[in-house]
Image 1: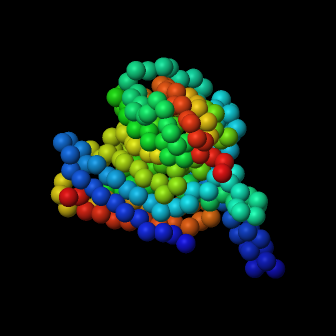
Image 2: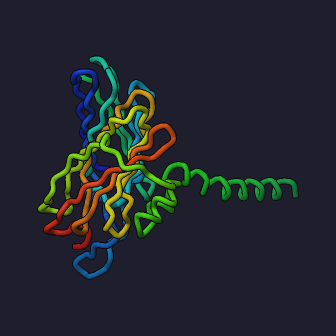
Image 3: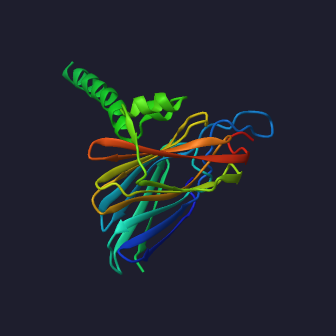
Length: 103
Length: 145
């Protein structure tokens, strides 16, 4: 079950700041539940950032990214109205994506 | 007969294609490595030159190991990827970012740290690897629970 995502893309001097929040438990597989059983790993493995449909950043991530991951990326240039899309896929095959317009 | 053969060939092709596709998306061997050296070997990094052009902006002391903000940036021209390793975590390789045309070699993220550790960043530029690291002291770990 993919939780909501939030994203903001803001124009800075010479680049666009892309800040994205993903809702995800990022279970490491080392934590135990109240019954003492290990909680199985559940974490985002790939993150892709696209601007106007073109991939600019591809990331591979481990379980050691904090819960509800927040990333900031920087894209060269950019203009108001550009479409930024961020998508993730986790180790269970679950995925989610969000889109924002540069403001 | 022919149909059976075709489906068998199809199944074999699927089996072959799957690990390849997984490899391209997520480097299982490198992320499953239990030491930083092993992870680097799996990534195909033979040697990395220390560089001052990799800027790591992170706290020296992190009160909560579950959320340690780390900002990294490479000023090396032609940087195509940044890799983060938390050397003393159970699985040191934390994340790897590939920057294609149009992105700046910059990323800010929150990492989990089990204990005080050296945080190493590798930058790939012009087919070579460069490295920088910073120690972050952790007062409460973020991996167990």
